[in-house]
Length: 275
Image 1 (cartoon, rainbow, N blue to C red):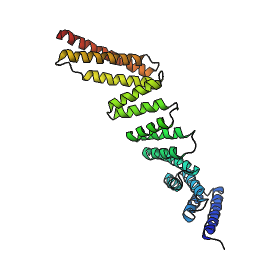
Image 2: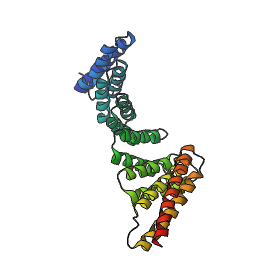
Image 3: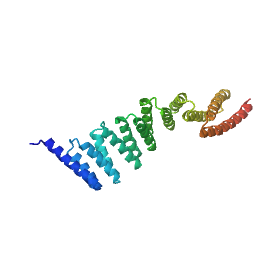
Image 4: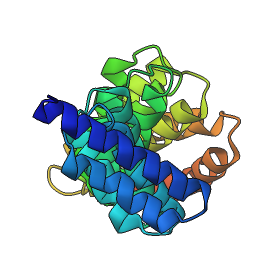
């Protein structure tokens, strides 16, 4: 006499065969529903996971993203560390992206990066999670993912850009000191690259903002000295950025240098007046 488990497995096998037949005869909707039913009717069957993945894939083909996501979610929850679970997390992320649901996509990509066994794909998956968090304006989560990226894949070619993105998040959040330290890291780690040039430009921009905040008031000589030092530092940074071979950085730096020199001229006139 067959056990309950054996009966369940036999039923799952019969349903799987029926679903495959529906698929062959182009009855895609019925195939998807039958595949999806296997996980409900025989959740412990060895076929349940692959049936869920088949159902989700067919729902995608039918342009039913909601049903596809439900099936992928069930598979991820069922066994996230399995090969199919990792694939489901990745496919779910792609479905969310297609619908412009950036936060959900980012969360799914982050999960996929954690569970995937494919270490060749893992960096790109995690990177995409960071980009989608940016699109969702989830800046702290974006920062966290790029920090994960730099720690998990320290030798990857995209690490300098990842640190640059972390710096830009901190700059956006008004955490200037932390941002400047990160910009300096980019310059040190990726000298001669566009990321280093952008980092130098951002340091120069922050230096110019600081320069303009120094007011020439009593004690005049002390403040004038501070302003002169800040001016020298700003010019040095813009000049360094202008020496890079990246057009946008060069153009912006050259324009800003003109503004700095105009600022210098005004300051020089004030200094002569004080004397």
